[in-house]
Length: 103
Image (cartoon, rainbow, N blue to C red):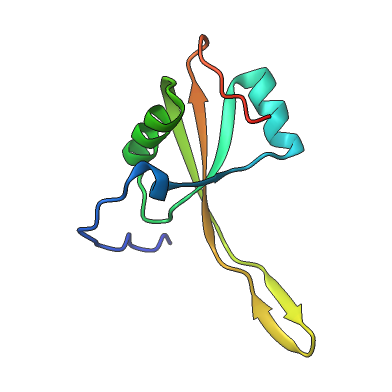
């Protein structure tokens, strides 16, 4: 069962929505073959806000946005158990004539 979305009246700027691009081997493969790019985004951001932020920051046309809520993993810190933070991942598909160059 999905958690209810937190209610907030705060509006986020595009720089607050997009935390960082995820440049991984799988992400580069998707970018070159399918024109899809992965980003870590603010957990409060929804799909329309993510679409608007990517279009404004990178000056591209976004066709679709898919999001994933990633759970934190259990980790050990010396003799104590800990947990990494949960985060949100967005995969955006761009139109065929647009590209983002991270390198």
